[in-house]
Image (cartoon, rainbow, N blue to C red; front, side, top):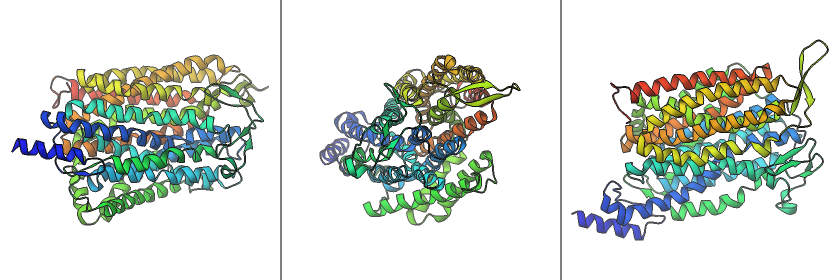
Amino acid sequence: MHTSKLNSGMATAVRAAGADIDDWRPEDTAFWESTGKQIAYRNLWISIPALLCGFAIWGMWGIITVQMLNLGFPFTQPQLFSLTAIAGLAGATMRIPASFLVRLSGGRNTIFLTTAMLLAPALGTGIVLQHPEWPLWSFQLMALWSGVGGGNFASSMSNIGTFFPKRLQGTALGLNAGLGNFGVTSMQIVIPLVMTMGLFGALGGESMTLVKDSGWIFGKIAAGTPTWMQNAGFAWVLSLVPLAVICFFGMNNLKTVSPSIGGTIPAFLKIVWLYTLSFVPAGIGLYLYLPTPTGLGLLNMWVVLPLIIVSTLMVMKLTAFGTMKDHLSAQFAIFRNKHTWAMTALYIVTFGSFIGFSMALPLSITVIFGISHVPDAAGVLQHTLKNPNAPSALTYAWIGPFVGAAVRPVGGWIADRVGGSVVTQVISAVMAVASIAVGYVMLQAYESATPEAYFPAFMGLFVLLFLASGIGNGSTFRSIAFIFDRQQAGPVLGWTSAVAAYGAFIAPVVIGDQIKAGTPQIAMYAFSIFYALCLLLNWWFYLRGGAEIKNP
């Protein structure tokens, strides 16, 4: 019987690219070495660049808003922060249905279609950026649509986790997430570069002229320089089209994980249906949250977020049909497990911090260090005088996400050897202390006529935060694979990543509000308190002597 299954598995490997696989036993060493490894790693290497593009599309508003400020777009700083926050919220909300897509529609079908979907916000963003005179809501709509890229992470991770044996999941998930996270860094390097050239000739539209100095990784770009702002969106089309084709013909659906796909077209319809549903609560929540003229401004962030999360789950459950309804109900069982909620909080510490700081850092650098903060005749601090020695956000903002993404696989590798919760405990302590230090430096810079003097310390501490959060990302993945069985690990990975992704909304809003209030340090002090509380949570559930699950 065993030989028969092995032969069957080997035959499957021959026709595996683009096929549905019925027999999948990664924990069987013979099967893994003869058949499984080749298929698993092929899916992983295709998944990584697809996820990278998803992160790039999702995170691009953090860089776009900086350049909108430099080009003189007619929006206030809070309105520009709102664009980054909207993209963050949309991506986090779309991760909720994305957590369940692989089981409902298959890995190949899900990764292909969600990658192809990125073409819409890429093209749409390129179009609106050619029209500074268009109303704010048109830019907010494109930021909302960019959330598709954020949602892709949940489906990508839950898919890759099913291909690998438990002993390798920390490393595999760390590679997928870590190299995929380079989308943030890639975006922060590529967008300033492609905006310096007429990449598409006459088809790409006319250039604009910089009103303020800008920059890229090699230094300053002077005011007056022609800038093709629209390339921030259009450039991604060049990679998305071939990637979508490779996903469709090179990846696989595992029938052991997705037993009721029902064919390719029905699978696509389920994906489109669930993704569309997630836009409804996100849109309504933003309408209640955003100030006029876009929204009503009735609710604050801490009311809107749980409202959106709960309503998204309810809409999914109430509108599901056929086998989709049964599968969703089965997967909702993760919410009855207390470890789902514990790991959700711990993942906010790591990924929530990584993506939140990635979104907020560029504009924070511009606002805090781009202005000389000097008192007027009455001694009241003013924040209107341009700082001629300001560091360019587009020159430095990429460094932190680069470090965080680079060490993510290392975090998974270390966690595979010493235990995920041990690593999480150490990085939580580091982040708690570093956040207090960053807050203090931000305060000093915000009250200085020469804030650039504090920039090296500010940037060094933020790199430390990114380093710790990147290592912690890998460790939490390993912990989830250790704590949950194979059927639940995928949805839990997706769910925790969805909630943590709201850091992309929270960080720009909290930091932006505190900068506006003149107390930027308060945001970082609040983050530090949260990290300290999660340190205690991690110890209680997974490290203390009487813990129900010791990890290790």
